Image (cartoon, rainbow, N blue to C red; front, side):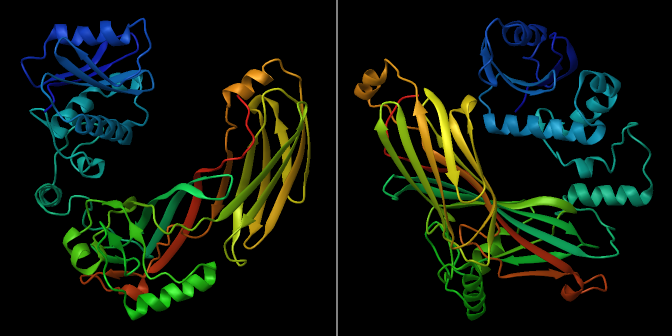
Length: 455
């Protein structure tokens, strides 16, 4: 429950003020300006507690958007409201700047009254708000528009409006993953996980229902369903294509869905059934820590021949199918801060020593699967009086990091089917053009090396 919403400029002047509780008064508004905006010390937290009043704030350009309460409210709810409130304002007049706020203050007050009911957040979907709130203010609605608004506000489908039509019905599905790895110098995996998103772009007419099926043996909270013959054949085909072992399912530690997904059907059928919003949206998020496909293996060999000379050899092995190419490959090899010069030799790509970053950056445009490429470097070091002290302290060398992009799912997630049903309009599942794409990018993909020195 929010007691008030305020927008301050960089000087601390109140541009927008909407109070929902009598406990929020002028001194409460002034306290934030004095203690936070005009504070002599840097603000390190978005939450401030002043005189038993809690202030949640986010920044947009030079403005402070603040939610105030004197009660113990859910902090995540408050920040979710503030970020979505900023998103609604941006959908109406672009960037939330002081000038735009002053030019649209009547509209902002109207929006605040719609999205907050006595301090309780309501509908924050800009698509629905735009059907009855325009930039010019409240306009007279026709009978048809009033029926449409009523059905969207009171109906079950608030994320999609009626009457959408396209000449060509298309559906795009992207499986986007970020693979994270920490590997020991002995090539032992210390930690690894994949964070993924399923993003869709829907250009479908009418009010269609979509069904999206993943690996049949999808495991959530350590509960699995048996795989079907169709899923097994698809998995076998995909394993041949990617060069990975045949896997009938994946283990997912946790996942979250868009509000359009019917969770009851997912629990019973292990299929995701939903009526998609129009345009681009995030269908689901997930995280996996088991049976992760590691696209690359980095083998570092570091040898200190003397106090002023070091030899580095980096071997990069691609573990996926030769039919697949990895793009935007970059290996970052840290070197000691007292490095005076580096001589590199590599059989592929371009390597360059960046003194400002204390690292050798090795860039390769693309690498096909099943290949091995290497980099050799001779590093000249300046004599340092702190060498003995560093040896006693036993400082560790920063890990070797890697960036890349590969066109397959590192978690093993596969799309079994993607179907569209629209009973009211004259088009079937076969009339819809569907596109499915897998992209895995590196997150923190690091390998430790054995050599020791301090940074």
